[in-house]
Length: 218
Image 1 (spheres, rainbow, N blue to C red):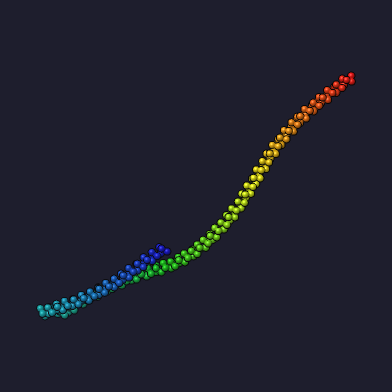
Image 2 (tube, helix red, strand yellow; image 1 turned 180 degrees about the vertical axis):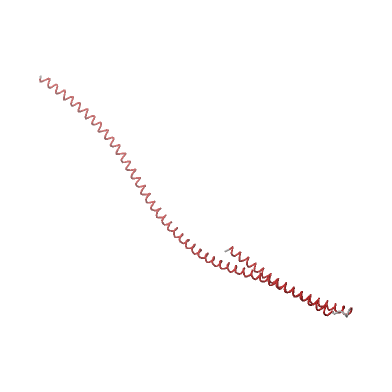
């Protein structure tokens, strides 16, 4: 849009320059016409003075015919210059008009492009607002979800902490029970050894008793 605006400004300036050139050419043509009329008047005055002098000096020469021919030649030359100037002016005017028409078409095309671009910009702005609203909604949902997940995570963490404490207690109980079991096994082992010792003693005493009894019978 800024580029088209610059082009539009340049075209406006070019059109203003062309209009100034046309006005300048019109003024120049008017000046040429005025200058031509003044030169014709001056030349006519000069011719009138020459006619009077020549008529006084040589009345036998046909000065009227000579003056008429000179006037015709000058008028023909002046007419030719006028036509050339008008043709040049018309040519320049046509070129300027064509340039103005071209620039006008470019301006109209640029205006149409600007209108279309403005519509596109408005559509994009509407789409942007829609996307921003959607983004805001998604961010709100994300915050809510994060809040719920944080709460759930805190609950899970508390549960894990509780389970770890229970496991620690269970582990302590198992270690204590293992120690008690080992103590009981040690007591059992000592009791079994003592029982075995007592059994051996009893067996030894029984054997001695039987032997003594047999000896008494004999």
